Amino acid sequence: MHNKLIVENLEKVYKTEVETIAVRDFNLKMNSGEIVTLAGPSGSGKTTILFCIASLLEPTFGKIIVNNKVINTFLAEDLIAYRRNIVGIIFQNYNLIEYLTVFENVAFPLWLAEKKKKDVKERVNDLLDKLDIARYAQTFPCFLSMGEQQRVAIGVALANDPEIILADEPTGNLDRKTADIVINLLINEVEESRKILVLATHDEKIIHDSARVISLEKRT
Ligand SMILES: Nc1ncnc2c1ncn2[C@@H]1O[C@H](COP(=O)(O)OP(=O)(O)OP(=O)(O)O)[C@@H](O)[C@H]1O
Ligand SMILES: [Mg+2]
Image (cartoon, rainbow, N blue to C red; front, side, top):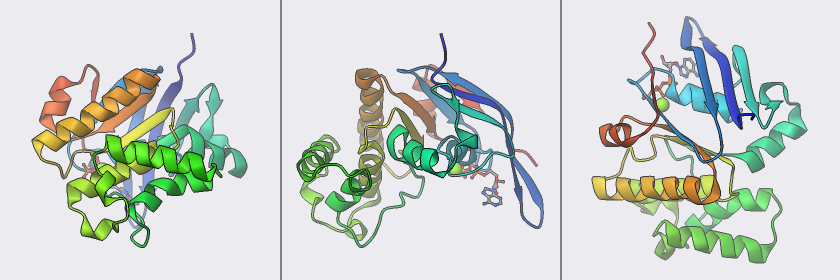
């Protein structure tokens, strides 16, 4: 049986004035319905790994294989389709669009995918309900608490119903109760819809509760 997501010998070196080896020889194999937690101190390469899987960064060495295709050699058109339809990323710093309302932020990936207006409305309202932020639909992100903005960011990542969810510190700014709600929501997505979830976190409780943890070391 093939694995849905394979990361093979991933290495990422940032070449600025100094060379930083952010990731070295990272390997991962996952099938639908699985969750992996990336743990490790600040600077150990968690965000870098997620960005490489999301194809937002190009690996220095190694391969990312999704559905039997090496995505880091994709050309523009396939890359756009991959980013639009296959992966959804919850950014550590949210990356919400400040001049769009909460509704519009979550709708944005669906507009890009040219979904029908009626379907967009239904999908966004459903997600806002699930994330318990429906009352902020017409509000701009800057008026929301960090925890509420975090939930909008999750809505954006889930909008296109991606097969692979990448979550970068999704509970970083949430209290325990809200953090548990958010994590359970992501776990439900994985279980109900047979998705893949790669989760980067410092949260000791999440790490403790995770069946599969990869601990990264900081490189100097
Ligand atoms: N664009 C960049 N240019 C140069 N160095 C970078 C860049 N992005 C990240 N790095 C470096 O790569 C290393 C890994 O960073 P990364 O952000 O992946 O770590 P992290 O585990 O996500 O950390 P945190 O827990 O603080 O979010 C760090 O040493 C960081 O300074
Ligand atoms: Mg990070």
